[in-house]
Length: 143
Image (cartoon, rainbow, N blue to C red):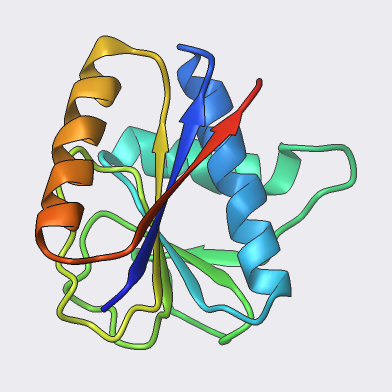
């Protein structure tokens, strides 16, 4: 059963949410995880693809998308669904719904900003994870 970490942002800026996702993906990669960023739309996936090159000065996080071939275990993967994903152990969920947790995932990361839509869907996911007996932690982040 995966552990779930909710990162609660004090900002409604969606770009900050995606930048935090990139920082967490980079950190996970450096910790030896095989992260997958589950995007909610092709536009968001494209933004993440760009941000992984630019989210901080001198940054480049090796990554690939589900539209390009997966090349190495030491890279972040981006996708719109988890259908073709079997070898990940950390999921950064940017979709409004609870992901399929039947895969052997160790951790799920949820990033909730202050937009009404994201807060409401985040609360629903939090309750579902708790009801399913998953350990849930929260972390507050100032933008």
